[in-house]
Image (tube, rainbow, N blue to C red; front, side, top):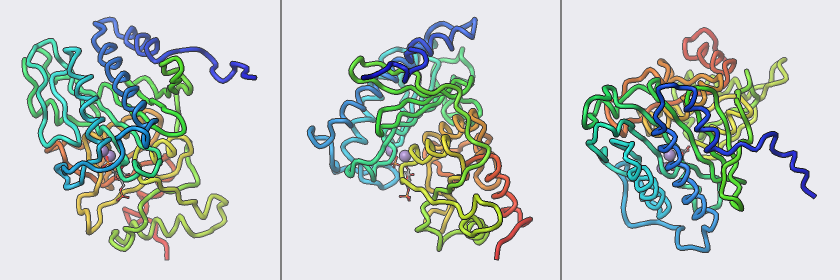
Length: 342
Ligand code: AHG
Ligand code: MN
Ligand code: MN
């Protein structure tokens, strides 16, 4: 018999969004409405993901995206649903997504002041084998809200300027994690009532963990310092934390969510196959790092803080190192040659 103790408080995501917006006296309710449109899209994508195999959603389309990747049906479906949901409220002036080559200008109305970036379906290689996939989003405001149409500078803002970011995970349950700069909260979807309910509030990444996460199949192509660091993590020493466990799902958002809960480090360095890294800066990495930093974590491209990078183009890639404060400090010693491992 269920006790009802699972949820400390019954707070829906709608209540939570409204409560957060009320912290800003100048708020107009537009942002609340924008996030509501977004959660609607996530609910629809979640419905199709949950029925994958029964509906006609698995498999490939005969189109490729700008990265040369063959689009899966679910990539295309999620992209279309998100674009439709985000265009209808009149709050969004432009969006950029992994699946579209160019920025789409949605509205030239002065009142439309938000820019939304998204990876509609993250973890495409896991779609057909029933492994966790997700959706990532980041939201900016126009740099000059009195201007009419958004310009490229509005879309190519530093991650530090994000006004909100989040992700949905279609895993053992559907989970939506988001932040508007006041901490990180997670909501679990209850399909029987059609609501996201607060399941974890004010999430904090542990100071350190015992896991590293990376596609180690690329190790041959890594820089020596990175190889050295990972070898160090795998070698026993007096500290019981070593050797670290390896966990890698290959869905960035799922690897990030585990990192947020258990701590440790995630790395996708540049390598000879991907000299600028593989992951895309503005719609994959920045939103995640915004959440991670809100929870007390740190992320760099090996030199600079990710959120300080000024993007030059929408599909730009970046190397990524992110994790708990202790592992990131250790990584820096290796990258700066103040510690080595032989
Ligand atoms: P997407 O499915 O949106 O194209 O993203 C794929 C990304 C990311 O989710 C994942 O962590 C990474 O690619 C996996 O890369 P490898 O297969 O090279 O490990
Ligand atoms: Mn992705
Ligand atoms: Mn994707």
